[in-house]
Length: 280
Image (tube, rainbow, N blue to C red):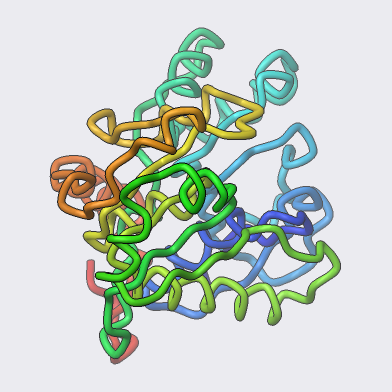
């Protein structure tokens, strides 16, 4: 059985990374709490490490075989010699962003850039796209000051607002349902406006037009997980920004294919088809 990270944070974007990988790999996953992996008591499992790797995430219990696929590594973790030694015993280390890649290499780790697997998210076919989706952005930036807002919302027909902030006490089942809800939001959207990496990346993977607003970004290095051609705007630019979806579409095929190829090389042997057969 494969293992994927579970979380107890108020950001459902953390969970969305595991949600997409579970769907892509086609296998029911055992969830391993990221910050309690040292005390994991489940069956022996292959843990695909994908996401924000904190100091608390290492070491990992000996019953777990970690595969470091696509991590963002806490600088405090990489300053701890014991943590670095643990990582070095499980090389190569896949990095979600170029910021982590540089720091891992500086720490002497054999590392490579994977990118973020959420780019492999596929739209839900029964959802008909057409709306504008805003997630964790101030809608007043567009409602009151943007001359394009009224015209574009008339074309889109509807505007939906949402957030990736959830109650951190939700159960694992509830967190999966919250991920599925956001998957539906994005599938219905034609244009996605967000300040969240794990809304922007899956939306890009689904072929959506995306405006990424650099707002309330506490760790700028994490933004290097975004494909370099994706435009990032500051809040003060939003009032004049065109909301025509065609102006915010990006060719991310190269990025997407790189992520897909890397996943298949690193953990394709764990992937199953719809009949439960291993593909690789």
